[in-house]
Amino acid sequence: MRSGRRYRLELTAEQAAQCEEFANVCRAVWNTGLDQRRQCRRRGAWMNYAPQCKELAYAKREHEWLKAAPSHILQQTLKDLDRACRDHGTFKVRWRSKARWSPSFRFPDAKQIAMERLGRKWGRAKLPKLGWVRFRWSRPLGGEIRSATVSRKGVQWFVSFLVDDQAVTPEWHAVPGTAVGVDRGVKSAAVTSDGEFFDRPFIMDGEAVRYRRLQQQLARTKKGSANRRKTIHAMGRITSRMVDRRGDFCAKTAAHLAAKNALVVLEDLKIRNMSASASGTLAEPARNVAAKRGLNRAILDKGWHRLELALTSAARYTSTTLVKVNPAYTSQRCSACGFVSEGNRESQAVFRCKAADCGHAEHADVNAAKNIRHAGGQPVSACGDLGAGRSAKQEPGSRATGQAT
Image 1 (cartoon, rainbow, N blue to C red):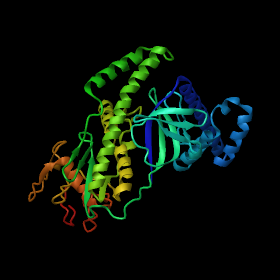
Image 2 (cartoon, one colour; image 1 turned 45 degrees about the vertical axis):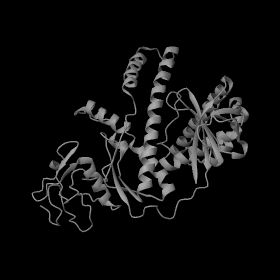
Image 3 (cartoon, rainbow, N blue to C red; image 1 turned 90 degrees about the vertical axis):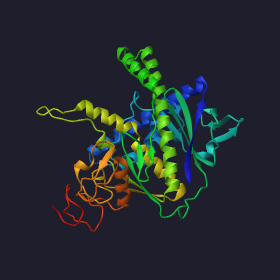
Image 4 (cartoon, one colour; image 1 turned 180 degrees about the horizontal axis):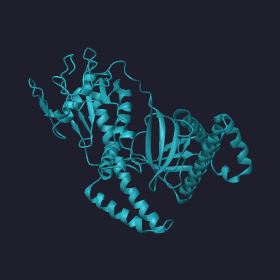
C-alpha cells in the first residue's frame, strides 16, 4: 500500500533558489499547457499529454530557461495537467498564480533518488540537479520510495516521499458488525452516534489577535514592498500552524473511528456549495451577507472535507467501509420514533421530539448522527424517509407510519 512521508528540509541558500526556479518553470509549463488546451477546445480540437510532451522538447531548444529544471519534473507537470483536465474539465482547471499558488514539483523516477540516514534527527536525500539535501528525520520512512515531491509552505520547504509500505488491506475488520454515524458541524467538528464529541481549537486566542493586526498592517503596505512580503510571511507562519493542527486532528479522529468501526457513515455534503458566498442581483441584493460569511468561515475552519479524506486513508488499513448518505432531514428527524418536524430541534444543541407519544430528548448532534447511522448506506429519499418500507409521500410534520398528512 502506498502512503506519504513528509519531512522538513534544511536547504542552503543556493538550493532554496534552485527550488524556487524549478517551481517557477513548472508553473510556466502548467499555465502554457492549460492555455494551449483551452485554445484547442475552443476550436473543437483536442490536446493531450503526448503531443504536449513533444512540443516541450522542441521548446527547450529555443528557450534556455526551460533547461534549468530537470526534464522529468516538467513532464510530470504535464501529466498532472492532463489528469486534472480529464477529471475536472479543461475550463475548470485553475491557473497557477504566482501570488496564490504554493510552489511544488515532483521527481517521479525513484531510481534517481538516493537516501541516507545521518543520525537520530537528520537524514539526507539526493535529488536530481539539487544534489544532497538535508531534512529533519521526524519519522521512519517505512517503505520503498516511489517518488518525491518538494513543496513550500510559507517560508519553509518540505519533501514528501511516496513509499510502498507493503501493508495490505485486511479481508475483515477487527470488530465486524460495528457501525457509527458521524455528524459534522460548526460547534463540534464531529459528533458520533455513540455520543463521542471530537473538536479542538486550531488557532489560539493570541494568534487570532496577532493575525488580525497583521491583516490591518497588510492593508497599509505597498504592493511589491519588502514590508508587505514580511507581513505575508508572518501571516503564513500562523496559518501554517493552524493547518498542521487541523491535519493532526483529522488524522487522529479518523484513525480512532476506523479502528473501532467496520462501517462509518457520513452525510454527503456539498461543502463547496455550502461555503459559497451569498449571492444576489441588482434588483434584489443579497441579505445577511455578514452572517453567511461567518458561517462559511466556520465550515471551512472545521475541516469537513479533510476529515473525509483522512477517513478514506485510514479505512485502507482497517478494512472499514465508508458510506455517504443523503443529509435531508437528519437534523429534524427523531431517531427514536421517526417523527419529522422543524420544531424538533429547539436550538443548536437541544433536540426534543414534538410527537405526543414520544418526547425523546437528547443532544441534537447525537440525534442527527444516529439518523445518519440508521441510513446505513441507503440514501435518504427526497422527502426524508430512511427506510424503504416507509411512505414515499411523507412530508415534514407527519409521523413515519406510512400515512401522509
